[in-house]
Image (cartoon, rainbow, N blue to C red; front, top):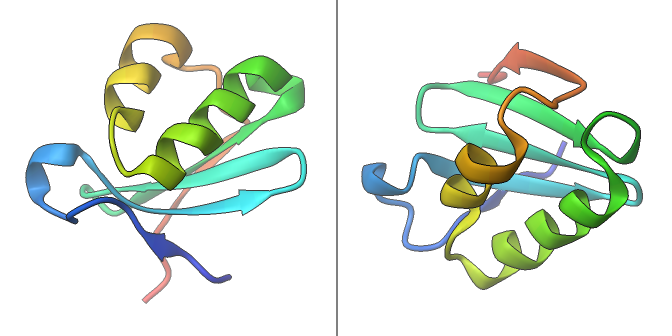
Length: 80
């Protein structure tokens, strides 16, 4: 897994890292949980928007809270 740091990587973001997949995005939160948001569970349009926000380094956590919520495929603890 090759997670990329998100934005300025401060605790205020809520998101610390991400990894883009062809049909999904994995988002690591500062809590240490990694969530998989997939086309199937989250919807292709939402996932593509999340990819754009992740690349820009701004707005991803807010978007997830407002538009995605619990529509994730699975979650797991961050690998050490």
